[in-house]
Length: 260
Ligand SMILES: *[C@@H]1O[C@H](CO)[C@@H](O)[C@H](O)[C@H]1NC(C)=O
Ligand SMILES: *[C@@H]1O[C@H](CO)[C@@H](O)[C@H](O)[C@H]1NC(C)=O
Ligand SMILES: *[C@@H]1O[C@H](CO)[C@@H](O)[C@H](O)[C@H]1NC(C)=O
Ligand SMILES: *[C@@H]1O[C@H](CO)[C@@H](O)[C@H](O)[C@H]1NC(C)=O
Image (tube, rainbow, N blue to C red; front, side, top):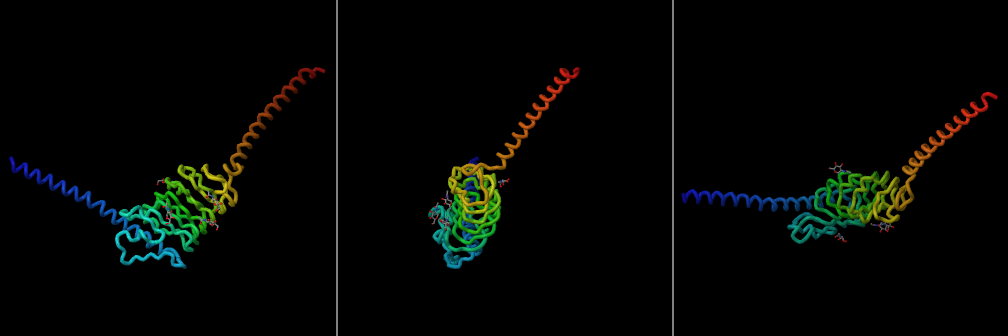
């Protein structure tokens, strides 16, 4: 009886230790892979960009835990959390495409690549790779092509600055779903069509090819077709009234003057 109790207690103790070990080891393991992933991120960003003035003095030999958090332009979450929160590489004359390696910086919330010589398109996968972005600044570069509609899935975005590029096409209507936008600047591109309903000033849209809608001039497209429908309908009614009246007149004139 007593032996059975003791062995049961041992089994419980064993199970408890086993479960605890699992739950204690797992977070340790995942946080170290996060850190590895953020180092990968910086490595591949550095590799993918041409850096003529050697602004990116990042070296990856003899890295100690979290030492990359002190790299130029890098800010981690806090002293014990070696994950990159903020990457700020503005005005460094960096040249290349949008760094694909940023997909390894999964915890990134603030990304500033403004004032460089970046070109090519803003990648479609941006929202999948950087889903937690609060601020994205790609202003003053040479990005071309269309603004990806997938940016609508970066639902925490407060600031989206993509002014002074060579972006074409329309502003994707899906971006209107971004309910937290406070700063939005697409000025100095080659965009056309309706603008989203954001609380931003006219200057955010300045110097494009043909943007329209509040706070700019109303769009011709929809207003125009509505007017067209309206005039078509009223024309139809007027035509009906006119033919009805002329029918009555001719009927009356036949009846009244027919026998003269
Ligand atoms: C991000 O880092 C840059 C450069 O260190 C700094 O100027 C900026 O204020 C930081 N942004 C946030 C939101 O912490
Ligand atoms: C972009 O360049 C313009 C003109 O050179 C400058 O006024 C503006 O501050 C720059 N914006 C950013 C985000 O670097
Ligand atoms: C947002 O993500 C969902 C799920 O991945 C996808 O089905 C949808 O098409 C995306 N929306 C945009 C605008 O890309
Ligand atoms: C957008 O950019 C233009 C030109 O770079 C600037 O004049 C304007 O103040 C900016 N607007 C916002 C809302 O940042």
